[in-house]
Image (cartoon, rainbow, N blue to C red; front, top):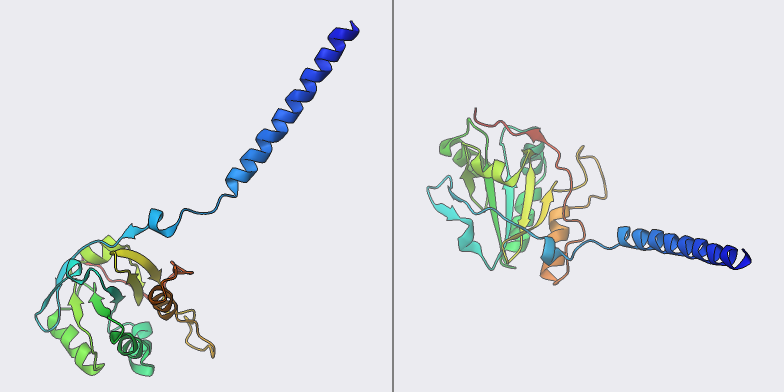
Length: 209
């Protein structure tokens, strides 16, 4: 009986140890870091759109360059703030143009045509074009929801950042973090983008019905 009892106790103890190991392995697995960016990268949907001057732009033609897509609606107060009250977008586009960054605005607002986009581009003295996406197909392909909504694409055609232009939705902060600038600086330095996604703020996009 003693021998049987000892064997039973040993088996019971081993079961407890194995159970403990299983729990530790599960905990360790749950704490595994996320996959590297190159393994989980999201390809930027290709598109071909015409700008307010009649020029056609195909995203694939810019492969090998960093590209910033800025969703706009000239009637949106949040967009107007960054183009009229401030010059956030134009200043940033000009600052990175010499570094090989391509900046394209896209208007997915259903009632905006080329003439209205041209008027806005001239009013704001834009150094980059506004592409017409009246049917909303490109905007929906990118999953954008508001204006402004920003997308930064790396040289391999992957989305490196998507979301708000900055962390100042009310426009009253003294120390503003510009997420697009941060993403571009990190990419140009050969570093991974530390903040790849944020929630955009602004006006909801008025899609075509």
